[in-house]
Structures are given as structure tokens and as C-alpha cells.
Image (cartoon, rainbow, N blue to C red):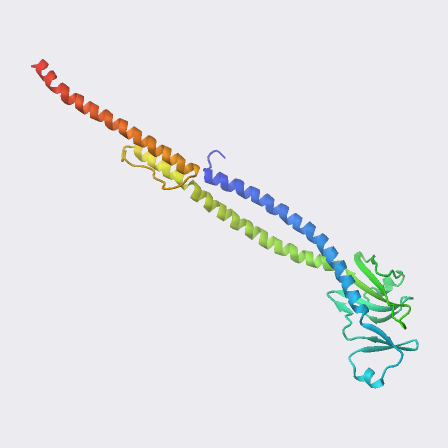
Length: 270
């Protein structure tokens, strides 16, 4: 660890922290998504059944031509006919809706677990659950109140496997997007660290050149800036300038002293 450069250390720690954050984010996304999807499935079930309530009507008399040529479905019931409008959705987004008698007899629509739910009592406007072969199903019932539709219920069914399918899609998307964003963030962080630490290399190179005596007049000169590195470079430039002045004054003193002492020394030697 001590042999690594500052840039490598920053990148390493940043990457480790980012990996932890991404992992926690993935877990939170799955957890929250599961709860949201469960509520969404239940809400969609209720909405689908409630919309179908208005698509069922009772008529004591129906014109034969209308029965033959219309798009609606007619069922003989009691002293009249049940009209199921063509907008009645017996299957939408894996939500099944069926028209049932109070004794559980299926009259119209689809119920994939009709045998298993035959003994499940109807409960108006309440979501019930039933497990069939290890799969959880949500059941929502609505009693039809219109005259002539006595003892008739709408029963909606949806499987929790729909949530599993959507969770799988969310999981796959997260596994692709989160690592991709993590890689981009690590690359960006490394580039930013490199650019941020570039003045330090410039300071070191300038100090090395001055130390080796190549150019004592050389300065770091990072330009305008108010961050810590610019202030540090400015202090170094001032220090280099004062050292250069001191060395220049020392050389000038030695030169002047040598010139002034040359004549007396010559006389003494003579």
C-alpha cells in the first residue's frame, strides 16, 4: 500500500467505496421493488375487476337480431339475459376475471384455478390470498348489485409469479446499468484524480531541475488559482526566488571580495 502512488490510492479507495454503494443500492432496489410490485399487482387486480363491474348488465328482453349481430355476449339467466359488454376484459396483464354464481359456478370469463377456489367464500371488495401448488394467488371479489344480477359475483385472479417476472426484469436491468455506471464513475474518478494531482508532479519536476542546477531561474508557475495546490506552488515559487536572490548575492560578494583582495595580496606576495 505504501508503494502505491497517491492517484492509485485515491482510485482504489474510491472504487472500493463505490462497489459497496452499488451493492447496497442493488439490494435496496430489489427490496423496495418487491414491495412496490406486490402493491401494484394488488391495485391492478382491484382496478381490473372494478372496471368490469360496469360491463355486466341484465335485460329482461333482448332483440334476437341484436344477439346475433352484436359484439356483446348474452347469457340466459333467470327471467332475462345477462349482457357482457365487449369491453369486458377477462384477461389483461395476467389478471383473470370471471362471472360466477354465488355457489361458485363459472358463468363467463376465465379462472385458471376455478377448482381450487370453488370452496373459497366470496368476500365483497376484499383481497384474499390462496396458495395453489406453491404459487400464491390474489383473489378479489365484487358483488353485482344491479337488479336481475342477484347472487352473481365477479372474481378476479392474479398470480404472484407476475411479480417474480417483473422482479427478474428489474434485477437484470440493475445488473447491467449499475456496474456500467460504476465503471464509468471509476474511470471518471481516476481521470479527475490524475488531473488534480498533476500540479504536484509539476512541483516535483521543477524542484528537481532547480536542485540539479539546470535552471535556477525556473519557477513552477501554475497560473491563476485559489486551491491548496496553487497556494503551495506560489509559496514554493517565492521560496525559490528568495533562494536565488541569496545565491546571487553570495556569488556577487565572493566576486567583489576576490577583486578587492587581489591587489593587496599581490603586493604582499611581492
